[in-house]
Structures are given as structure tokens and as C-alpha cells.
Image (cartoon, rainbow, N blue to C red; front, side):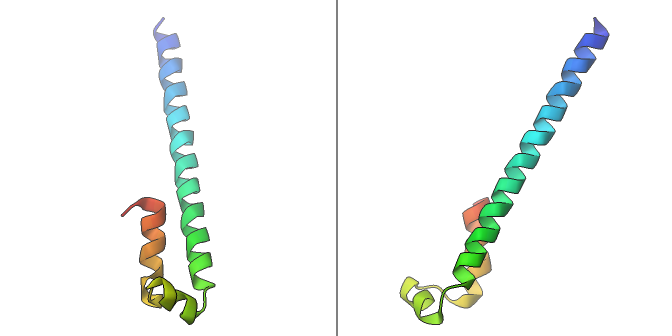
Length: 67
């Protein structure tokens, strides 16, 4: 009985690990895509959006991680 409980606990832990890893990879993908798209804009386009080039990294972080 104890062995079965230990196995279930391990399965739950592994599932959480993969879930967390999957979420982290998805957030990283959003960060990289946002960064790539904003860096690809011209200075004129960024000015139209009210974004300075020095703000791009912070904006990408906020888009991905909400910070």
C-alpha cells in the first residue's frame, strides 16, 4: 500500500515538473517572439507606437512574464 502511494506521489511530482517546464518554454517562446517582432520594426514604426528601442526588452518581459 505504501509503495502504491509513493508511486502516485512520484507520478504527481513528475507531472508537475513537466507542466512547469512546458509553461516555462511557452513563456520563453512569447518573450523571444515579442522581442524579435519589436526589434524588426523601424525607428519610425516604434515612434508611432510610442516605444523607444531601450524599452523593447522590458516590453517583451512584461508580455511573457507579466512583470
